[in-house]
Length: 250
Image (cartoon, rainbow, N blue to C red; front, side):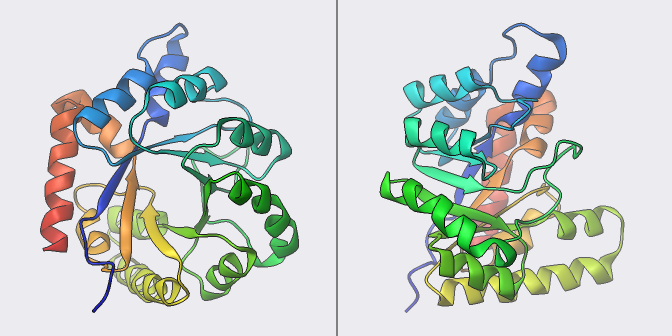
């Protein structure tokens, strides 16, 4: 009897509420208010990525999220000394280590763990000691997943972007190949004792196959839900995503 067949969690990423705020300047729209609305609408957690260039989420957002949230905060960050210090000061429920390039619009791929094992093992050790669950944002690659396990990560988050991009482009052969690889690597990661999450680019059209993976316990979805909330409102946008996730799991 497996122990991972329960209700799939939904984490809501609020980064792009901050993107909209920063485009105009000032305080509105407030990403912390968005987090509170998501929490009220049933989010199981909130994700926020504090980038080195502070292009969307800023330090004071993290301060306020830690003060106000009742659900867990998943703090996405690059593996830099500055971000480690911020995480150790706040001690969020989870930290997700992601690759980061200044020139990218959004995170383009998974973290390269295998080439940086010693560095990353030392980097995440203080975070684990502080009580944070350490997650690695990673491609569906056996070598990288094995390395993530070796360095002491407790969680991996599979990058679903290539799958979603192929679907949007109508390249169904690539889409199906990416999906099958994620299916296999979800099972492999679970066999190592890693908790498996997934996210990046998921929407109503692409979420169902990923949500059906029995090993995946959490999806983190942001840009699509924030965009859809312009038309539906955040609560209804989340409710439809929740319905699709639950139907896939049933």
